[in-house]
Image (cartoon, protein in one colour):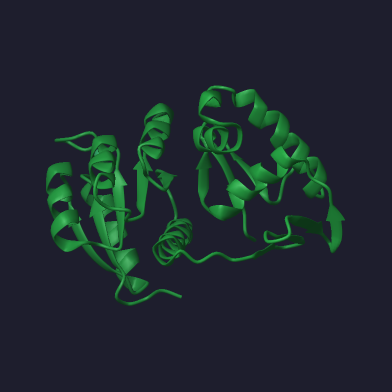
Amino acid sequence: MTEPSTRVLIIEDEPEIRRFLRVSLSEHGYSTLETGEGGEGLTMAAAERPDLVILDLGLPDMDGMDVAKRIREWSKVPIIILSARGQETDKVTALDSGADDYLTKPFGVQELLARMRVALRKYTQVAEGEKEPIFIAGKLRVDMAKRLVFVNDEEIHLTPIEYKLLHELIKNAGGLVTQQTLLRNVWGPGYAKEGHYLRVYMGNLRRKLEEDPAQPQYLITEPGVGYRLRMS
Ligand code: CA
């Protein structure tokens, strides 16, 4: 699955984590560039044009959030944030300032590779402007041209809001979608603080789409951050 030419810029000040990333990524066919400083990271991002950026939030010279924001001013390159436990607020801010996904330390290499594949695929789709008209994940099938939703080949009726919410998650399937993004795109710009709308409608969707709504297979909550539509 990995393309040998995919170049990853690692901006992380902890030498052990940087080494872990360098070794794991090159083992899986990625080439890496690395720095321990945000300022140099920005320079390298501009000069080297990597295909993906892995960005630590706690850097010695700059806030990781500001690095993400600055990159977003001129580039759509996928950014995956690394955060320490307890950095919940920072993580949300970084995601809202344009980062694509996050991993909480410590994380495993498989998890990292999965997040990278989703972020890279999304980037390619955005770049080429292509859209899948049919979405399939396990027993869930959504025909986006006809706006029809099926579970086990049985048609499920969704309200317009429920469909819109599901559609937002499908657009970024496998990836994280923040509460802010969902509220803004489904309900509108004035609803960014109405987190309870999300909980209610996500509950409805789970009852309609999940075999066991209490242990969802597709509609996964990322506590304090947002939701993710799991592909497998
Ligand atoms: Ca750090």
